[in-house]
Image (cartoon, rainbow, N blue to C red; front, side):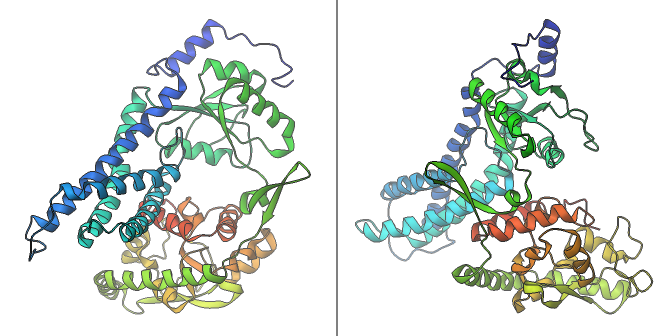
Length: 495
């Protein structure tokens, strides 16, 4: 019996007391007021750091001997109109990027990518405005320093201050969004894991509804009740948002949940369980008033391919120069520990199924696979050398692949390449596996920043890789790259 067909469910005093016991610090307040606290704090602190960035840049340029001034310099007040304009541009762009939405579920890496994107656009818009309004000239060094300092301070704001503020507000029951996961689908366990161990700011996982008994590994989630009692559960637990993971074959049950959300003014997100919808971009249209979802495939080509390749060349070249001392130290450590060879080359399958030699710093014995043949690395793998154990733990063995990027065999971001032996096996077992090879293989990828490294599900990795292929953009690459840096050395699957 659906929610619409069932009679009103009475929540007795025992259940109400249990709810209060489960959330002892949550204050009774309107959901809109609760959810608005954190976005307002984020907006005000962002505005503060933008102004601070300008003041620091101004005094670095004109008042300190860091950058000598030959002639006189403009007053601080003459810069105020430009600062006001830049502040408006930054805040509008950050707002358009969804940084101040109530109850957002964006991870830290996505927020940092959005800050960088807003920063790039604001810099271009400010330069364009300065070109048209020439009554006031601004020091280009002040503008550049302000932009760099703003990027750094806004990034630090989100990684330190706002995270601390979010934890404090959540502990006081202020600015929180109470979330429940509804239904049991192929992605339910992963959603629960992420909400448990890496919840976005202000998000509190209250439990699950209609999932029954689930084995979620090393963590336990409270079962709030059955879907037939959804209306009563929404009120009893004062839920603000649902994440619906019900498989699409139960579409009538999904419709019932959506109607109850509309009736109770509870927002919701849906997790698609269909492979095609999970991986393929689509757009909404209609045919004579009938809504349609038009699916599309967007492999990287044209100007997008040119821009991606140019980005790979510039960034990888800069990284090689910057990391040169690290290369020298690693070479010396490997030489001292286990001798030659220093590098390890292995055939991998790349763009359009072409073979190339992928390089790593050698982290295992020279004869590591002489007896076993191609096998996955495992935790505590006895084939690793002493230095190799450290290199793999900190992901430093992958650095020589910057040479593969410079040669055009790999990209900074893309699906991780596999050996021909495994590709032949997976192409028969995993649907659309070869679609990963429509783009260059990457140093890091969308699957890896979502925790799918090492001996993890090939099907799950493939879904994420194909999603990347069909939804690529330079901003997507930036997001993956920033999340790679934020997740660096945290993966439990690096061995």
